[in-house]
Length: 277
Image (cartoon, rainbow, N blue to C red; front, side, top):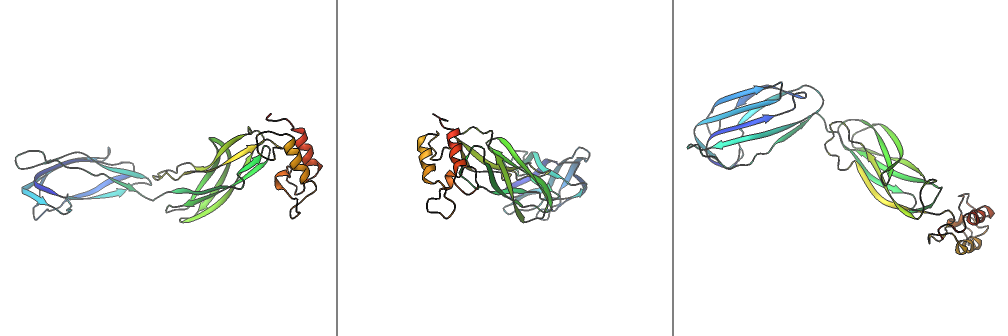
């Protein structure tokens, strides 16, 4: 209780999760030297306590002061709201005292998984390439956790990785692989990683992180203009027979990713010639 004047009676309901908590004992506390009389109803099976406290003389306090002490028994792992409802404060004349109530929350342990980084290795790829996306996850809870990281492109699941027994306050990075073979080119795709909420996890705002996009090009669209035409053929010919370190090396023309631009790459462009036109 805080910032109250002329309080004569205080009445409230307190509800809790009876599968997690059970009331062992309760004690009314003296306020400014006054011990109140009381009326009480307790249904521990339903998780419900009603009490009315009546003080011999009206009380006023402008600093926080406790009215009751309640001791709970923890029955099992879980969480429980501690909700104050239907509270009534009255003065000596029976008039209501305007007030606010604040409820509480109890959890046996904190369970919290957070995706803290999602980084694709490429900002664009050719249709048919495999794309690596690095996702970093952190256990911000109190116990070792086993869970599954899901990689998503837009809203489509592309990969799942199981993390086993990640200790508290530690992080790990996993590689999510996206096969773009069946993906429609000439679109931007949002990249994200997701961990489904754990049992009794309360902070779920950081369970998913969307970070960055990947553009998918037609295979052979070297200059990224949305079509495969003579411009792409000309760029590939300029890099013909080049390799990493060569002055004419152009990794965008290495369509088969074998670290050399040769007739295979040019043949791929010619095979796809006209796409997007």
